[in-house]
Length: 477
Image (cartoon, rainbow, N blue to C red; front, side, top):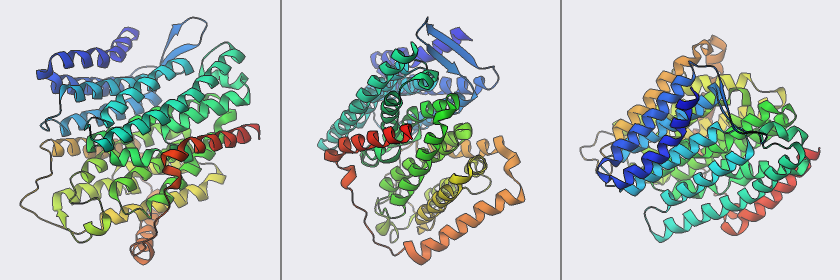
């Protein structure tokens, strides 16, 4: 099992460079790596947890268990869907190479349980994501990618200082070393992970980056990549009980912040990006069940970004007067139902499981976030639609990708079949109904435009500084 795991980690990097040298087979190699990642994740559920110690006396270890399995499975399915979507799009071997490398580095981050190997994985993720965001080579794409890279690198400088402080205090880079570390180590490391994961105000770089990237890159970033910063936070909450309340509190704040922006947003891709922020909050609000929620969110959000890429407009006001193709609308409704918590889709089980794992002080905030989710996606569910003869914007692999992702939502729903009790069904349905009512009575005609001041590049580093002060205060408290 150890040998297989090492091969699985190295495979994307090896195949990535091979595919660049053999461009005729780039798509096949890429899809093969995604399938291998998916297969390995499924295989993990049949095996006991595997812990690999890479270096003696430094705490540099990898852990493969059912929790990481959820995140690895998400990464594999999302990557496969993106490759299918791009199959006949004319993407070069360079694009597929970076996609595979990004997949491999995200998987490596999911396996890490120490701060130094995680640092290496996160830095490789930054480079691969930067190159994919900049792939169109337009002025806008290059600016957005440089903005992402600069923000990410500054955050990782804070993180690296924190990792050194952990080693100084515990003589180990292991996550468990946080228990013996000074407060400033925890604050610095968490700041880096909050930025990488798009959490709370530290993640306000995310909406512009995800909304302005190409459609398949947006799907990859929101579906899988940001979770590389989220799983370490979940691990820390489970390994070090002292930080569990801090993680849960950040989860509630993130869920409310993201949905607060999303309900007023009129741009489809920006709305989906803000909902990525919000849904990451749901994962952190209940760390012990965050894996299943991460899988559900990854499938839904990737599908929604791919669908948004083929809509006739990004502007929701314009879409209300431009009927979309009925099959596309059906796919949009299914994905929107899942993220809203509708039964028969895995989003229902994920939300029930999360809500049952909340502490009493979290309930009001998370129920408010769930209501905001229903309001936001009512904007997509109630768009006009009609059968159309020509659909020029649809990529040839679009339906294969959507079938994979939405099929995954139905199959994953089986994993938590015990959620289907009368009480569990009524509450989500009532939340959705109340959200739809609020949408028609209040939000449909609302034209409030929230300021983007904190999203501006000039203020992103300042926000990091403020967040660092807040973390110091929370840790000391």
